[in-house]
Image 1: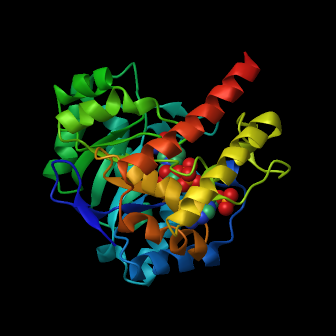
Image 2: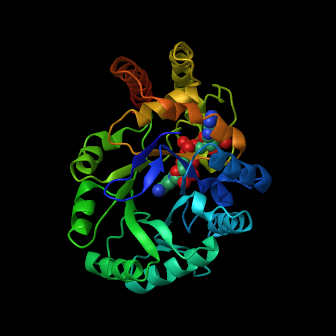
Length: 320
Ligand SMILES: NC(=O)c1ccc[n+]([C@@H]2O[C@H](COP(=O)([O-])OP(=O)(O)OC[C@H]3O[C@@H](n4cnc5c(N)ncnc54)[C@H](OP(=O)(O)O)[C@@H]3O)[C@@H](O)[C@H]2O)c1
């Protein structure tokens, strides 16, 4: 496994990060916990030292499972643990965005308890909260840092203006945005901003929620909440799986699977620190490892990018 410093921190993270959103039954359906636990062990054995979760994943379930496993198998020291707060799910009805001082302090305490740890390595704001002042967020962060409960702070799903506003009040070490062959929005503004300010980037959905994993065909029936996306059924699925089939030929020539190629494509961008792979079972880790061994040539990176850009454009033309 290859490692790289995360932005301005002293954290040396593996280029693949273990993503825990899959422990969110409301989106991914019920997950078999034994293969997931084995995947965590396989990740440790493979040198993956970076793990991403959130309090909102399964309303605490993901953090609880992780905390239990880390404690019973003595794994806490094996991982740089990143988690997130933002969704206040303490009320019995709908969840809402909350980055107020009191909520941050209580959310962090709750995450520490579920994770069965005394500190969080990277504490991330899950998304933008338009109605809480940045200086209020900064006060909570200063207290958590002073008490040793959090080491570094990051953000997720923010644009450069939002990061700039926060950076006037506290240090941002990382951004967690979506980035893959099927979603390149951040290339224009967020990635140059992060490079310029030494902010680490840990990209989520590098396999576009599994669609770039190579398992699906035009007539596949994809279950669960992700099926609602336009690429996951009908004409969208047909066009994207056709592009995936073409990408498989490039992958074979490089002695990679198409999933490894798609992951390596994101890791070849110099602004990307670590790609977060969503994991349900050991094969998801074992099948991803090779991606991090090297980067793509300029030629292969552009060829692959153009292939999927064409597919996306084709779909957009058809849906206008
Ligand atoms: N900050 C945020 O707002 C945010 C949002 C989304 C995700 N995240 C984080 O990012 C992580 C990853 O994102 P994601 O789950 O959306 O996307 P992803 O990694 O693009 O997709 C995960 C899916 O890809 C498939 N897969 C995984 N490894 C594979 C391999 N080696 N070969 C073939 N297929 C493979 C599996 O799908 P199948 O079930 O089809 O096999 C898996 O469920 C999450 O777990 C979470 O930690 C953060």
